Length: 344
Image: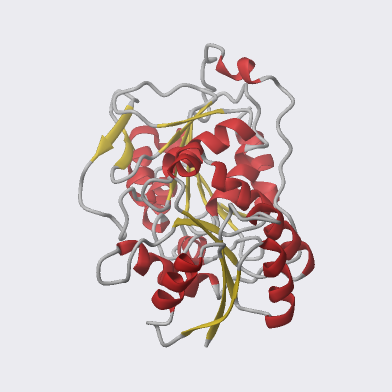
């Protein structure tokens, strides 16, 4: 049985979330908190397996509650939001900075008429298996001014010409950790596929763009790949590289159960760049990316997988390691250092 604590200042939404969660026999709602102060106290007293957390609440907001919980009585936390401006602008990712694992949209109805209700159940059940520790995600902002990172790109290094990254559950903080250590003068483009709820990719790009030195944007079809720029796969399309070394966005069938798919990106990079590419597969459920990373390795690329100890969920890296797709297995805090060794 998975015990869940619901945190939301709206009685209507607490009732709805409870109604959704209790349709699954594996889930039990053990309490409801109306604000962050109550949430901190109830986590300590009830010791739930998962917490669903609202952000905008009186007395103590969700950000502070997450920080307090993760420093005092760590537990997997899923942020729920219904504020479109927060989703679009990436404000909800401040919860990830504080220690939450996921950000998803609040359901608006029961499972029969709202796909967000099914996502809520699936995410809560998946997060219950995550081992959290007493910590707070934090990467300082790069000291270089924002304007500096938007200078005309430099020529790419001849040895490695592109970095491709794939991640899923637990990915946003992992991306910030790795990409946040790369300088604004990074000499190659970076392509990223992050499995995330529909509508959240723009907020993710904005959040990363405001907190790391590299320029971060949603990829646009046909645009050239510039050094020092991170291209995030938009919703509902596969991010790939064209033969002209430009962004290609394709509406094709899901691959490995996803669209965008990490494997679709990696296969494209393997084909277009071969041994001049670096591929990184990090935390996430399932097996997306494993076959693609294998294709990159077979093409001569340098391939990296995040290790089990530092992964929120070790599914995707584990699959890649098991099939021999990985050149090197590294802890999260070692990946950026290795990238900088390979790509100056």
